[in-house]
Amino acid sequence: MSETRKLIIPGNVQVRLRLYLDDGDYQSYRAMLRTSEGDAIWNQDSLRPKSTKSGRAITIRLPASLFTSRDYTIRLSGVTGEGEVEEVSSYYFRAEKR
Image (cartoon, rainbow, N blue to C red):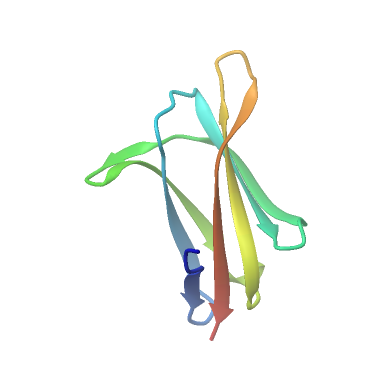
């Protein structure tokens, strides 16, 4: 079993998350932040990947005010040229506000 990634949020900062992509060629991407209970608390459409030294990734910026100390999931979906939405991956982590 893999260890849950922990995101330490020191105060009222902007949280920047980089989501690395596996293969896939979509027109754009959609990200949704959910609590561990499944409540959607943030989403953003029309995200575009950028090439990094570690591979293609999408960077999202979120206000620290969205988070409390609890577990979250970010679901990343790809949007095809025809407008079809396909889930690409999920990122599970625990936020800890300080």
